[in-house]
Image 1 (spheres, helix red, strand yellow):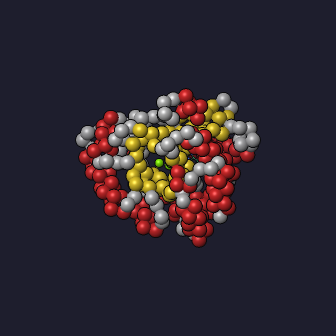
Image 2 (cartoon, rainbow, N blue to C red):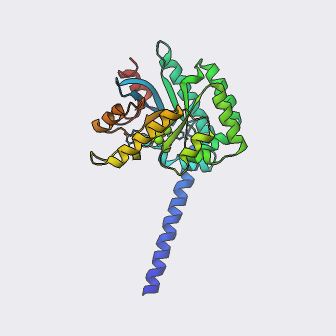
Image 3 (tube, rainbow, N blue to C red):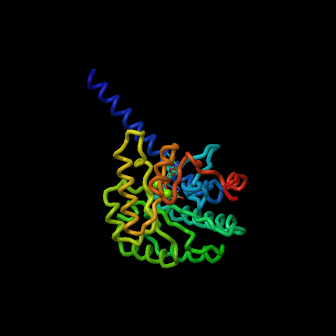
Length: 276
Ligand code: C2E
Ligand code: MG
Ligand code: MG
Ligand code: MG
């Protein structure tokens, strides 16, 4: 009986694996036509100066509208990276974000910034530098307004091409931002090795409650370290008044989080007070 049960478990396991495999395959196939079918959209999350609550810029976050539901990047970015489809998708993201910024900045005295997430795979291809250059010219956007967000895993592949791409992009004048800071193992080493202007403190470092003095101290330490290195800080995951107050107290320049705004569709941003 035990043997039979064991075999059933194996079957169950195989079924599950097969199901996962098919799901992945379906995502991969669906991704191939997502651009031409207009299934991608960007949502934009306001970046706020906590001192006066003014919007200083936006982060572009990819959404995939397929079979009547909106999929979050967690469901497909990894697959797109493994299949290298992220290069095409990423290029679409870059053009969409830059053209939107151009539109939003048209009548503004103080222009907004735009943060764009770029995956490790995209750093493995030198043509991305040329793409950035062409798109900034096409939409008349100053490179200084563009912040390229990289994660630690992206920098981990320390190849010659990665370095050349990073040099190329910063050479254009774009700023480099280290995303999810504090979740990896070698974050601090990267600050020494790459021309990083901005560090985004990961949301997991925000204090859980008033007694969470360890996290608060850690953030305070990061803020003073960044100050010494001349690096700007963006705090992610501001969900409560207490988080906002902590950032104000520490004089953090920029914050993002549900407390201020969720990521919002382009049309809804344009109907909101954010662009005023
Ligand atoms: P990320 O770049 O760290 O983006 C921040 C994520 O945190 C977003 O999730 C955002 O919706 C969420 N978030 C914002 N404020 C809060 C908050 O107060 N609390 C909590 N719990 N979460 C908050 P999203 O949009 O699901 O994106 C997840 C990740 O997918 C991003 O993390 C980024 O690594 C990746 N991603 C998104 N768009 C792109 C893209 O166009 N290209 C690439 N390569 N990756 C992308
Ligand atoms: Mg990001
Ligand atoms: Mg992040
Ligand atoms: Mg992330």
